Image (cartoon, rainbow over all chains, first blue to last red; front, top):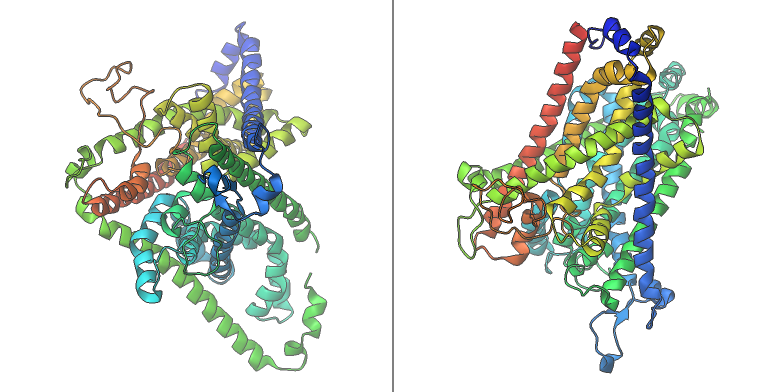
Length: 317
Length: 312
């Protein structure tokens, strides 16, 4: 039993006091206030970033939203004689998509394979060894991943494949390593939450373990595994510093694994501190922050749509 | 969904091709073992590499002396202090709020629009990239409230990052308390809040505490949310002046403060120290060791407290 204080008596004694109803009300108000604060915080955050992010599209020299999204001309400091500044963010958008996509492509198969080992094949080692290790590694700061990428991976790529080393490949590998523990943990949870009857029924019918895994367990756990993969993607997409350190930060479309490029987060990190508040350049960066926020919402919607299915699955039988 | 009927018509089973089915099974098992072992080796060699590269810096001199300008041999003393100070401030702000919200979600929330809105807000907050939280901090605390890059702004940003996690941990720990405890207390005539405050919260403390420590380990290494809130500079600190109102005092909450994680990120790009590489190696090792220590502490404390309360 959990720790009981000297118990019933003292509770009764203070219940006889006159202030306990006041405390009752105050306590409930406090808890409710904390809950409301979370809504307020979220709404404020979304509202302020949206407001600030839309500033670039209004005012005396409004930016065309279509150009902002679909143009790849990013020349924020071009003078009037060069045709004026250009704020097309396609380069960064595609950069973010390709680097986080590459990370998920690299990480997800390994993570799912490992989660099968942990949950189905070696569950005891999974619980006592793999899980604690994975938990340990989900907490590693992203700058540490970035620094290892910068000091080990970038020179390695430079020596093996030529080029600068700062590249889409380096970014994808660093992010893949970073999201591996997350996806593995969530995929393991998904598989472990399946009812044991699925496994037993399949074995009883004479199926081998592999047949059980790929015909019964994986399909049944698929929605939740996909949630794990999407969360990994969300993390990779929003990661700023680890990517910025290894990706090279040159403004170009991601045309090769070995070329340097930029992402939404890396350009915000690089330029937000160096641009004048209220300038067109600065406003464009805020618009990119809004874009990042909107894409994150997109991921949340995907996760939500995958979500409800998972409770149904276990009850099919 | 693949079901029993699929299996029965399966060619491997139906036509007596057992041998190949078993061979495939063995190959698959081999592949899964290889994947698991590869994953663990990858993670361990990653951690091993960081600690090995930074081993030269794991001494008191590096941890306590300030960085040097254009000179070798500087340490990370102020940065380490800033990280710890920020972490304490952020926890002081986020634990009461997070636990309060956790109590609300576990004890008071009814299935209503409000509860759904809180749930959605929590999900949103925990999915937000930390750079977005940092930008929000820049907008509110620096641009609008005009605090300047400061520890306080940094602590606020970290609080926003912490809140969803602490709320979830508190809610789960409270929901894990056996209902008999609550029912017994209510039957004795205690009010709901008395029951929460004197029975449920103490019983949920081990879970909450280990969650809080885990989260603390995470914000120790946070950098993206701090770049534009706590800032990327560290004014000279006078470690004999502990009056929070003095500018050079380490405790002054309105001074800019570069943390260890931010310094690790910045030291290479600025290159003001000739031994930037050693410094970054050392800081990375300190970061990873600290996170590991927090993790082990959380595990140990959680277990120890649970044992103690079971003994009663």
